[in-house]
Image (tube, rainbow, N blue to C red; front, side, top):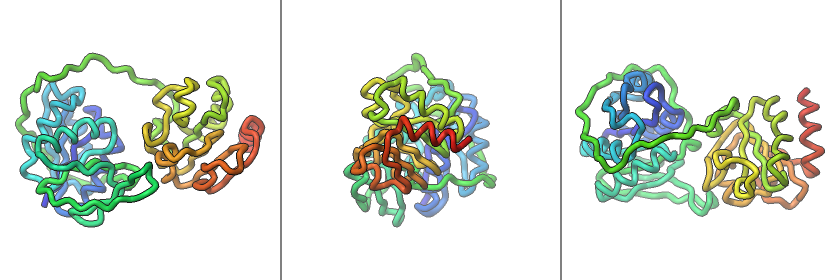
Length: 309
């Protein structure tokens, strides 16, 4: 029994999501191989080789893998799929774009966003916006799985796996990379941040989010938002935390003016410590908060900043 992890990377280094996925793969039992499909991606392959638990790295290097087009990466995974009992990828936009194609071509059922491995054929995954956990057992010969990265610790370094260059599949010709617009910020990336300060509809306006910036600066935090705040146009889409946004599990999550709809809770309730600030004492956010402050956020946030000094 051998598990294949499709690495998410930028050709120079691995994304953090890959490390969590490797941990999940290790719990499936057997050897763990990592597929790095990229262009001039030897550095990313070497980084994968140094992850504890990885026994082999497969490097598929070609120009048509440079931008991680799902059609091409999926075909590369399919070319070697028969050697594996499990194929895993992170449940990020990258993995969610590739693995459904792999599952369809293999004619198997994908198991999405697992948070626990109970046995090599049995997994747990959240359903109903995280309000229930489904235990799923698969009899498929090859199990195709996306991994919710907040459910698993990141794999440590210290490995010394061999890197093997494999034959690459041809460009599918079904898609072409056009351009990429990357949001630039001096703050930590939302899904990797250890501290997150999030605002909701209670902020009242986009300008009011500036009130949270000194707090985020003091804590070295990323800034996030609820879907209600994003839909209202207060902040950009890439700030959204929740079932239809980013799933996060920082050490500290501060929810300001967020009522706590189940869709938002699904994206942040695995945070280690949750602090909620809301004027409504009945707000659902308090049901998951470790610490709650009932009051006017426009008074409390400046006081917090002053206390942090």
